[in-house]
Length: 303
Image (cartoon, rainbow, N blue to C red; front, side):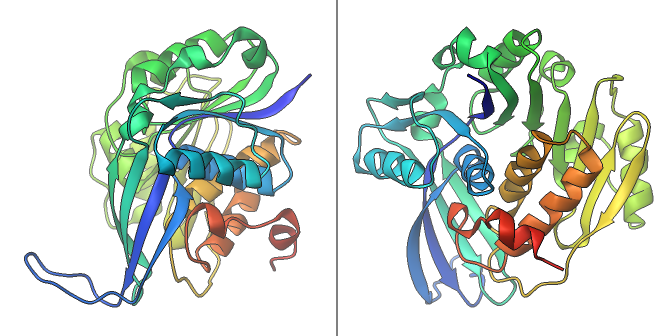
């Protein structure tokens, strides 16, 4: 049996506060509301792809606490397969998120918890061989991602690495990645070059500094401004969509899940990025991360 997408990554309980202003150091401000959501980059990306109609397996770990039980239930409710979701005798991952409603921007602190125990051995060779697209992010141990991507190198699955949060990682993991997805900060880390004001030209120069092989491509997400896509034969800047943004949490994860969902049926990275750009623009008009992911009809019908 072919599995469309396998996501190897993080899963958190998001504890979200909504406020009008960002507090200064030492300052206390009143918030407007508090909510809890299924989160973590891995879980968000899995839900995004599932809501768009893909068959998705999620590989990660939750704690044996109350959050762990609720997180598993939330994944199942979104039709994400949890057969490979392990349990750790400890606390689940948690993200503390402050959303500034006046700007829709956010501040995030992540406590990894069970995510730090996620192992590449949770995926057996049979599952890996039947996976079309494999996705991971840097909220689980990079060395475990590296082991998995190396194992997948001869399994004919397309390996996507979301190099987030911004940090360095091994040359081997870089080389074993088919598609690298970064934002501007992450691109600066990888290229070791500060982006200039003339953004697109500066992004092109920074991408030129990366040792991309012939089989590798890169996507640079630019938030509301859109996305830059580079393959070995072509590059293109895709403009963003103007929407009424209320919460940007998880929009990058929505982009990756939507892109993977499109790629499983059509390996055109530029068309996939246009589709994912639309999906992400819808997600920022709703509160929460995984709860904000759109359906396929919503994306297709966005003008």
